[in-house]
Length: 322
Image (cartoon, rainbow, N blue to C red; front, side, top):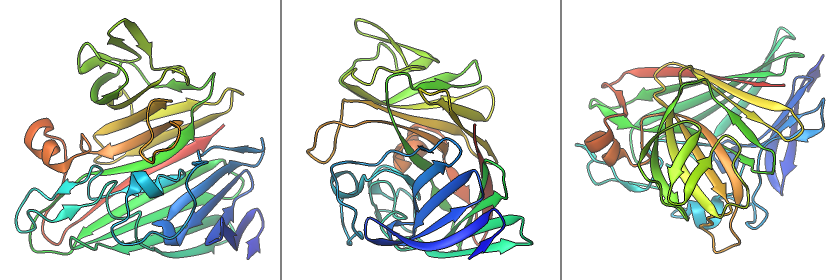
């Protein structure tokens, strides 16, 4: 179905049913069976595809109990909820309920609907009911005709008569190439959650330089051949971050609502969870709560989401491509 610059098309992506939507300058591809994954984010003006794709893992529908890092770290943009790291839910009445790695949204098919309103606005809504906990998760992608902007509205409803504690993070992955740069509004403070192949001198630091044994790491323009990987949580001075492509093109994400941190994963050839050669990618992750483990977030860091019984929470992102 087409309408002016707005276009909706049913297609396939690596053999999986997919939905491709266009608004003129941008084209997004969504795969319902892979947790509503945004598989591709294209700037049609430049012929540039922004999102990283894993060259080693085959694309396939997930099976119950599948490992994210061993089988489904495929790339694109996933949603992580009700936590990011695997572990037991830490509070009654669901204490001990296992939360899968990267949450449970990626491993379930989403109900996806797309529509065009008044020839000006394209909306793609994805909805999922919780499997292990009683919640309803909704994401709406909104594209206006001829604008290089995507607004994203999230809504989560607690269906239980008990408080629901959670973490959420967007998880878009990008290729890390020579000349890739990160721009944050300063000053920004950071905290190291995970370090592989490098030893930080302190878990707390000021962006963009991280003191490590042997010198300083420049996180603003990381070396793809550094042989390390880091998961960081940042508190920027303002609610946005920009990724600059080696060509000078840029992808900027901003946020509003109860988002507490910007998670930053940088893999400079230091890690692979699938027994393949290490990856070179990075993720910009607006997040509610920190770090990735819900129990640790509640016990130690003190940052987490809280939904009272039968209540709803909403937040928004905006991505602009230039």
